[in-house]
Amino acid sequence: MNIKGEKIAILGLARSGIAAADLVKRLGGEVFLSEMKPAEKFPGASSLQLNYNCEFGGHTDRVLDSKILVVSPGIPLSAPIVRKALDKGIEVISEIELGFRLMHPSSRVIAVTGSNGKSTTVSLIHHILESVGYTSVLAGNIGVAYTGFPIEQPGTDFYVLEISSFQLEAVRLFKPTVAVLLNITPDHLNRYPGMNEYAAAKANIFNAQSGSDLAVLNADDRLVTSATKNIRSHRTSFSLKQSTDAWFDGQFLRFGDFELHPGEFHLKGPHNLANIMAGVLATLPYCGHRLDDLRRAVAGFLPLSHRLEYVATVRGVDFVNDSKATNTDSVHFALQSFDRPIRIILGGSDKGEDYTVLRNDLSRYATKAYLIGETRAKMEKALAGSVPMESCTGFREAMDRAFRESRPGDIVLLSPACASYDMFRNFEDRGDTFKAIVHEYQKGVGA
Ligand code: ADP
Image 1 (cartoon, rainbow, N blue to C red):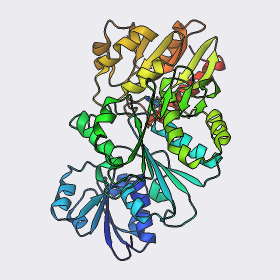
Image 2: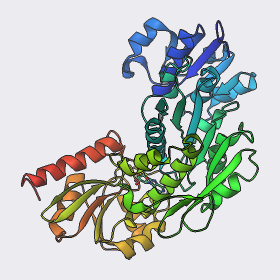
Image 3: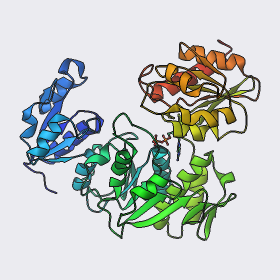
Image 4: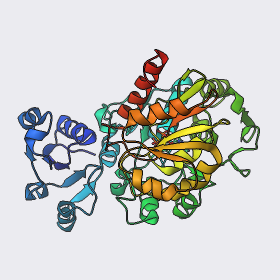
């Protein structure tokens, strides 16, 4: 696509919006930026104002003087200014759609979406591709935005993209060579009217695929199956229960003739077996005969920070940081990943989920729950009677209590089922705080 001289407006200046603006400008497009926050509250506003035509403090009709509107993942398509643009016939697209149109044709995209496991799976795919000799770039939600790379230039075999449902709300030509849908479980219900709309947004990842492109699907997930009934892609699936293209027979992960033994992996828990199957299915077509390299790559892959990350053992108590568990499904799997008593720290800012779904897992696997944050009262009500609970006024108090009450062999697990914004900058900040407190305990400070 040639965008020289084209008028492109960018709505919402998060990371991906700014990356998109730089790319469009570099390629000779005429960019207009529009941001809700006032300039005084927007770090870097003055340099943007120097380099671009822009408006801060709200979206005005100036946005509508464009051919294409690139909408930030934070802005729903129901926003009044987006509706106005659509009514006027302006094409509304997401940043990944823009990137795909501008990417050099010799590069391919492997894209991963799902409610949980995206970061782990894209990192594994990237690691496998590099291990078997490809040039691969990891991009999207996991770090630098897709359009933040020189994607218009040749020389990169694969862009491996982590993609949220928000980015998938406005795609049309986005056609990944491989698209992975890991699972669809309740999340972001504060943005979607219901699960079907959320599932439909995720399934958009397959919209432009044809029979020569690969879809990697979770055969155990009913919503994945129903949302992908009509896709045209070449389908492959993985399962923890039944024989399919990739499946776990209770002992081995089987991919036809090729098999992997979970004893070889650093990643723990059934959810990670699913992620590994998805990652291997996505890359197998590109591994040729280099299956030993593939095997070594999977075996050498380490868990990412804040995802069931073992921190330390202090006085016989293991501390595990799962701060990235921001919904109930990830907590469901976290609780199943250990064979010892768990003291779990739960709570944070609410994403609209029903916490009663955790009752069975908690009564089965947890000794006690320490509740923190904005969701404390809601959780206390939802979980009453399933597990001993304590409502704590602060994060430190929750950790101190959990540690003090632990016996050697116990696990203190931070797996909150909620976003972190009520008490922390983000989930990394929450996980880093957890780790810093554990390191204080190691030095004999506190609890
Ligand atoms: P995402 O990028 O989709 O948020 P991550 O790989 O960062 O996924 O993991 C987020 C949380 O979900 C972590 O707590 C992790 O342990 C858990 N998790 C990882 N994979 C899965 C999965 N396939 N199903 C459910 N939970 C998962």
